[in-house]
Length: 274
Image (cartoon, rainbow, N blue to C red):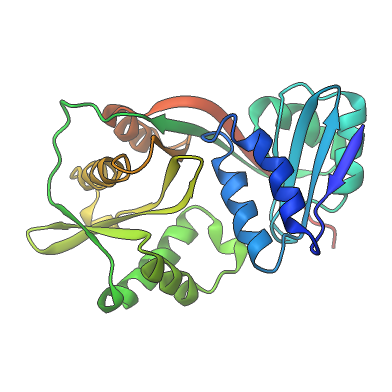
């Protein structure tokens, strides 16, 4: 067993070694890869390490102290790998990984699980040509800032992302500056939003999909995601997205567009010590 911890004095060493693994499956590794790039280039992650045993490699990343640790790697974990991961991440607030890894690793912490979110990971290489879209997609600009701030907060609350404690105004400013967020307009009215804040290995991730309640049930999310996916595929080999299993309507939308399930991912939150 070898462990290669993230070193704030040499983030490139961690990234170079990790990218050897991430590049073999840029769809499954999109989240961990993109977040690692972001945090290693900024203040650094809360904790990160690479675990190697018998030619296999697992990569653990905890972005901030009160968020689950993301673990990518082969589904089968030896006792030595489990012990090494638990020793390195003793205070993990939870775990996000494939369903198989979560089933093996989460119980080993001996902590009470207070929330479980099963998700599908989808990928798309080409849209279903029979699907038609309504409206126009436009990039969000500075004049849209206040609406964007409100919608980011509502989106975050809807998926429990508020626990990160982000500054939604700063988040909106980053998205606008980076050209990472779009609105769908129908007859001049803004009805939905979708973003793409992660792009690595030729794969763009569709996220921040949100439609306010008064505009739901009319196919706007389908048009929004479809038009954005079409746009992203002009410059990327694939797009991907995560969808919670508990929202069948959303999953039907993505599957109708041509998105295919490639993995089942589970996020569990542990009860925090008082």
